[in-house]
Length: 255
Image (cartoon, rainbow, N blue to C red; front, side, top):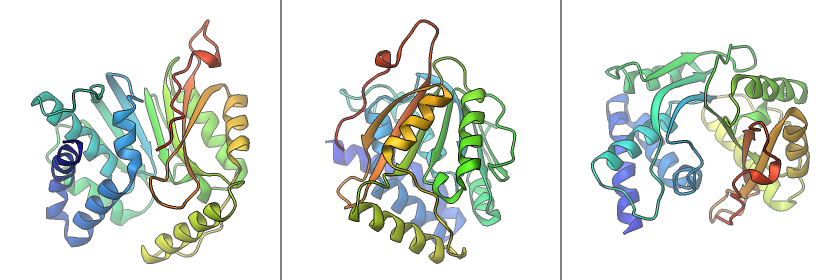
């Protein structure tokens, strides 16, 4: 039943990319269907019932399409009984550096009612404004250490008390699986026409300590699916007055 539902969700989320050409469509289906973090974010109920989203390094905005498709299916009564309801997207702003990705994303949401806005910009420099949920998926490792910390501090400042920040990192202490992650990062970057980047990586402990020093409560969960990688999802929340780190939901369940 869950597999059939996920296929319907994938069909709905990727359908709009057909008009963007073969690459846009097949990339959307491959990313949303093959990367378990999208399913896990919904199944674990990471997000509040309604929220303003900011997706930094959004690519062609497949995450936005996934969230909107999830809500459509839920409102039609097509939703797993044991899953929490998906969030209602009040607005979603996405920033992406690469012009081709921005163009593909804008084509998908051209007829949208302004719920989704995709903007071209470097996340090291753009104004984050305010949001309830901020996501940075598989991007931070391309940014030097000092600017990583600056971005994370600005993310914290852009969120309200109880706001949620989600990122995925590779654990530099994980040995061979971590090196496989790095190889894949380089290969994907090269295939997409970019020069091979220098990667700025940290151990899971270092990422967690940095986020906590900034003021987040942090939980982590393995997020490689069945792939032999060292990917870890971090869910960081801005503390609500009077709460402690132990009050944050525990998401550390093996994927």
